[in-house]
Length: 305
Image (cartoon, rainbow, N blue to C red; front, side, top):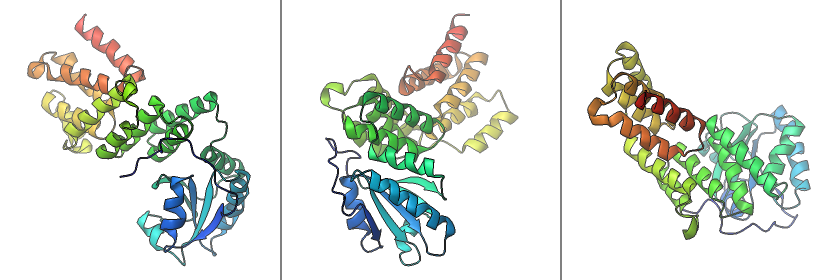
């Protein structure tokens, strides 16, 4: 499996070929392979689609302005429905981004010009300064909290284009793969960190999260467990299983609340299982997370009250 980001900054390609029409037959060469050199925006459209005709000129305008840093591939779904079907396209226009051979959902429908410009400029790299990277990281973290895994992954990858050893971005991209349930890709992403940064707190925290998520992958259905807990609030075993299921689904914040509920009523339940599990969740999430800070405060209140 290919690494999600190359071990060096990209060199923008020439202006020629920045905008191309692509078919199912040419998709591998014109999109997937080119995406290993620069991001490729893929616009799925059809001649009969009014919003498509509004969006295409805007995408072309700002891709041209990017001067080789990003490519636009236009796929007529009437003539080439195969790739659209594989990506689960159900309505058009639908825009995806291919970066390092991997597909990320962009957006569906025609956006206002300002949003199209921001979308293309973000992929093109915009300002290469440290402040721009900080903005991208903040936006990526917010996207991840909101469940926008694709958007978060794009922003983390953009940071890595200019700083391939940025531990925060490496850890963030690994967390995106983890949230998508791809443990193997998450581990491979962590391998992008140089040996001297392998024990950086951000990297080790995600490594712990991968281990924890792997252990909880077989947990039960959240809705079923939540209903059982609601019907029997004192059933600590079921509440504990609910916490495991929440971890497996990428919601450690909610898992912490369930574990704290067990500790409030029976601190030593099951030989301190809830306390031990809660500490592992804190370690995996990292000390900077707001829910970890609040959870530690609540735990201290319980232990030392």
